[in-house]
View 1 (cartoon, one colour):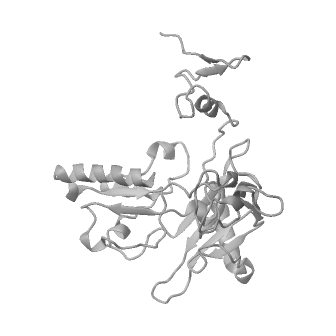
View 2: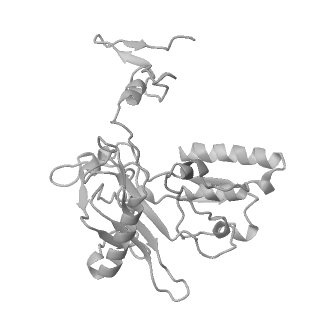
View 3: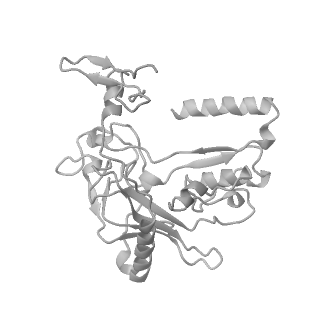
Length: 308
């Protein structure tokens, strides 16, 4: 997959340069989550040496690689590695700024919805400032103590925060991470994963990673700039900081956007595994009716809305 993406981006880059557009081009590439390590590693990903994976809030699930390139990037920034806090959703405010637009969602604001959580990071990426303007990142998850895939209610809640109070002049502070409740996939994969051992599961019970939880209760605290692998919970060493981050996390919960999404449905998966032969495809008609139905004899029946 990575080889294919590399070739595809190369093709786009060559086309942009051939048209004389490179100097005004900004290319951003980012993963959306860590690799999936659940189901005994059958998806094939490996986030070693980070802990956990996709659908979990350990660094293996939410810390991803990203890069920006293009002639629009100041030459002095080419090849530089930045370790400040930047989120995937910060691209929204950043792109809006570059396009000369205000990222504020005025319609949502009039409806009383929470403000967007997107920070313009262009000055940081372009080298105009040395440090990222983002200092906090709420960590979201479905509600539930031992919840992996979203549960029945599909509610959204904030279950932690990453907080950057590093003072690069004095060398004090740190990149802190708070997690609360039960966190799934509390495992480290190893340099070669999946393998014959992982296929048999972890521990005496042979559990798959998504069934292995670490109960953080009121809070597990990690110092990511010194412990990016989340090995040492140091909550008991910093009780004041723990309380401060708990308060910050709860404050985010007060304005979290969590509408009623109904109950979990399988119709999209049913359509993918049935008529679409393991490919994603349409599963609802424009009027909201179900496009496919499986009869008691196992036949797939296509339902289309009447032509108006």
